[in-house]
Length: 397
Ligand SMILES: [Zn+2]
Image (cartoon, rainbow, N blue to C red; front, side, top):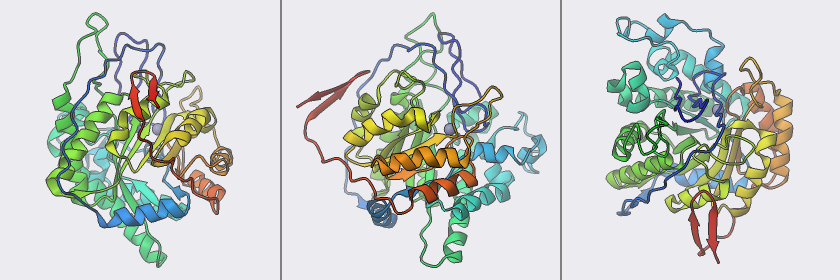
């Protein structure tokens, strides 16, 4: 799935559906307009039962997240008919590449991948729901089954978690509801001649995310993970939707946030530095904030370090298995990734580590081994300083 605004020579938006495209390339920075939006009022909310268990896990040791889903699915070399199954045999649009649909048509594969990650030592797996929103599924004319997609994906992950817990009594396995960045952005115009144009509205994005979030929570995820964020305003729409659903249900689950720094300039695709991004989202009181995807671990180091110094919550890091090579593959071995991420852990930067595109259960096993026994990073002291942000952060001491 591609999104290529004319104003940029090549923007390839990650969908995690293809190992070769979870890359964000930004030749130049677009102008970004940030809007402020009222965060939903907090009505009385209680914490979900798994909230305390996750807090305890992150407090006591470095947690391990799973690795890539998309590149693992690719190893099964599925064809159009696999994606269609019997149910979508007559669907009027090609479905190959719609990895999220496999929760319905090949749940055995999705569950097996989750199981492999738990077997490798992951404490938490992400649901196969990166593109399970009405906006993303519109590319396949499958907007109408989004709630069902999310429910089925959670069921796959939950079955794998329960089996892993039964296999090792006392072990706790968590399921994070993955929320992707969408293929339409609120901060950037896809039309070079109309910089004010947006392909989608705030209300449409909030509505789309709300449907996904309601389904993920109702199906029983332990936490929500808003990830691979390249446009801060899209992520703020997701966070706004999450708060509204918390108000509806009266129950709060941990909210995890992960941004993507797209190149060596150290900025998101919508132009923010890591510090400005943190200032933009800290009002949501995230359980964790982190960096994932585009850059390999080594190139990510300065941003993880900067975030670790300021974040008043837990910090996560799950890079790709290196920068993509000329063939769209990923070259870092399990030992390579474990070496880089192990150093982050020894430096006290992280509370949870894992892998993004190109990583496999073998990578996660090596990473888990590399961080075993290392202390968990204490969050930075809560600050009452005024923090503002545009493209750069502003801290008023
Ligand atoms: Zn990725």
